[in-house]
Length: 172
Length: 200
Image 1 (cartoon, helix red, strand yellow):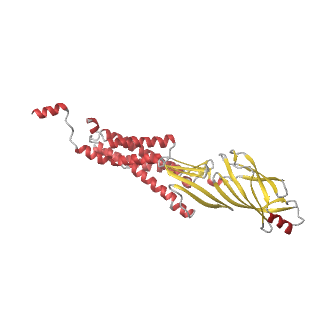
Image 2 (cartoon, chains in turn yellow, orange):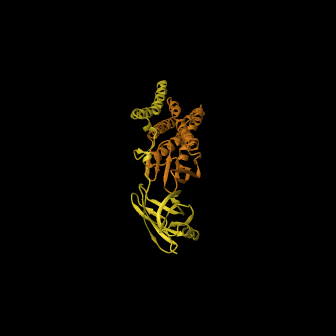
Image 3 (tube, one colour):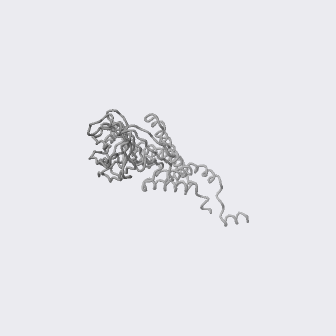
């Protein structure tokens, strides 16, 4: 009797360990990669969306500064918090630094699936104004490269956006 | 007091703690180890019994983990029931079989979890990212996606449920040692038998 109990318990252990794994391979026998590949909400992990950022326009505030506005769409199912967005702009043609920019109001919270307008304050540096006067005299506006640093949900992003513009020159 | 001498208290405690750990994991969603990514940018919670991975509000599923969790849940349930049954009746003929069936399963599952976690955090990211992930504490992982580089802060720790499960597993593993003490001690005489023995 005790021998029977010992063997029943051993078989129970084996069935407990092997049973669910056999079930897994039986259900996914057509495509075993389904078992081990991570999926986001039942679709492949490569479908993780990127936010949509669209330049809306600009507004000259003074001889040295202007406001740049962007439309930022949050494609995720959580509130996206942009704690900080700043950087510098360089002349697209000559790669000379022209000025710095930063978010006018921070942090910005964007509800899931919604859009928000981000306003950046861009300040021309004296060296930047001198470069424009020396190398872009007579031109109405300029294309720039943006080197940015953003803090989104505590994650720091460093990136470049080339050929942004046209943005107007400072007066004077 | 005589009743307490007839039961394996270590086994009883182990099986009760094991049941609590099982309840917390399955019904309350507690994990044994957690990692937070950024400020609510992502979450990674894992145990042998359940798991949760979310990135930017989207849940990530890995099918094989569901079945591995099922194995661990069944092992824990069997172990808790067998250990409690044995512990309340350690002197029966079938009890030792139940004890041998139950006492090692929790600690084996726990060790399997720890080894898997170490493999996930050390050699795998070292190969893919050339950096290891923190097991306990904080760290920053730098990766590049297209032309954007990211610095991702990570914060990881073992949870209270892990330590509860570790205590339960240890108690279950120690049950055989206490079992030897129980069966080696003679049954205490009750008062009437003691008086009859002394008068004769």
